[in-house]
Picture 1 (cartoon, rainbow, N blue to C red):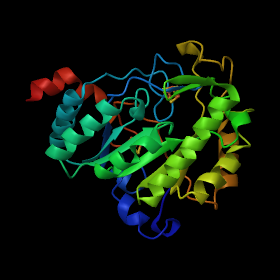
Picture 2: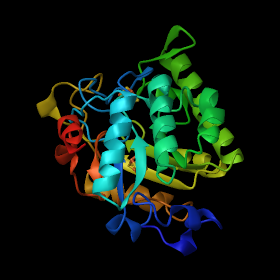
Picture 3: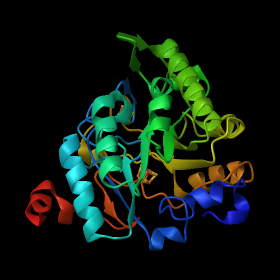
Picture 4: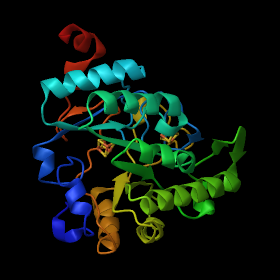
Length: 299
Ligand code: SF4
Ligand code: SF4
């Protein structure tokens, strides 16, 4: 968990009221996600496309898809029903930056109507360098990038393909492009003073040892927090693309890896891998109280 003495000067002020970062704040402030971003521009082997993006959300969950207008309306309705709602995130169900019109339209509508709500987004990073200026202009509070490797040989076992500049790339070449774009995007964000968190999915036998290298690489490029999440295998939800039979790490394996990385930078240990349409305090899910149908009835 985070404390002021663990953070770089200035960072604590920015995150102390943020439910996702401050152990203290997550009891008092709420966040919500709106699921406006259905498409994705890469394929992760651990993703089952029927469900939410596993980078930020719990796999096996189908979130309600919204238009930007519905998402903005829902955000305003939730903000008036839950005054502690301070943060609006876009985290899927695909990649927010593979759906830039929907993502940025949603942010623009909310920034206009409710400028006090902090905005955040999470992304696989492939399209990130193209949108950093737009992210800065919209005053987005912080960005989460999911980075699972810094070595394209490891990446080739995680990502079968990416779709980049109108072309599909596969294998090591795909992972090399993704890696370069992720590092460039991270550097561009931190140069502009935008807080950047890195998520990594720990996949035993594939990137578990390698995440120590990832930790060093993202720290040296200015990420303020590194959140290592366990792969959650969900056989009851069908075969996960390309990683059939892959197990997730045990709690001991996860903790051992987090301990190896700790001291190198702030680690986050209370992530709940919330769904793409989560509403409420962290660890609490009130999304069923705020379906589009119910929100429209509130007005
Ligand atoms: Fe799935 Fe990966 Fe795309 Fe997320 S980034 S939707 S996990 S393929
Ligand atoms: Fe933002 Fe991630 Fe927190 Fe959602 S879980 S509000 S995307 S930091």
